[in-house]
Length: 143
Image (tube, rainbow, N blue to C red; front, side, top):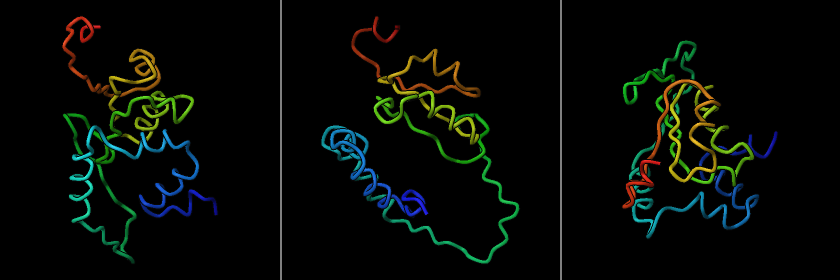
């Protein structure tokens, strides 16, 4: 069994990432913006819920399809915009966009991506989402 196959929850993945990644990269992925207040609030909100596995159930015909932002998706999961993805994988945002399309869900390209919006659009199919940081300079926003 590989090390990744022995990761059963988010904390297992975090421990593995902390060991494998250079410290600045790990903290970039693991951290939040500014004072990390929103990160702590989100973590606290998720901690209030527990996923209870139901064993010995027939899961032959499961269907997680739904609509998100007017788009049909195979599972209710969106791959959120993460800047600088090429720091973590040599194909960067293109790889993430292809993974989302392969599994029938959505990906949103970050304003601070390491890949152009055009290259990501060519690399995948399906709906295109983009996170826009609205800056004070309208020329930069237009670009």
